[in-house]
Image: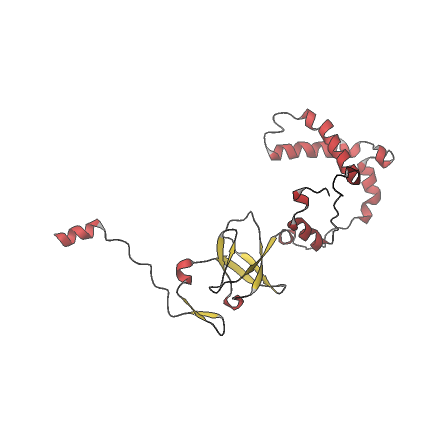
Length: 214
């Protein structure tokens, strides 16, 4: 890979490590180390970008569809000097047996979840991307690993791991109920002294004031 920010991200390194993929970056200012991909980009600019229409650039979906049509219909069937005159499709057919695929049943969605470490506060909460979540009371004072989808709505529960083991889900904190939970310091367990009280009544309505005045 080159040294762009997206290829230097911690998330990409984490996913590659889980899949057993070596993430190798080219030396800065040495494009020779990634000449094949640079040549592909040059071909795309010359053969695809120059032929795009307004319909092709109307949306990202349309652009991806146009690129896929070119790759499958033209690029894979064109002989390459770098492949000794073979087409990319022929070269793939000769070497496909050496390609390693993910294990059957591997949950790729779970594999690509983002991860962040947080310390559980005394009120058994953790903060993630500006949202406060509740976790199990036994984790108070511990450092946990939160696994989440950054594109998911905040209401979706977040996976919680402790010492490399899943220990449940973190949910958005219910602030009013949480402040009435009794905390026992020795055991770090939480218990409520009865049902949570109802929120204070709203201001008197004008109708009630009129009734009292009359």
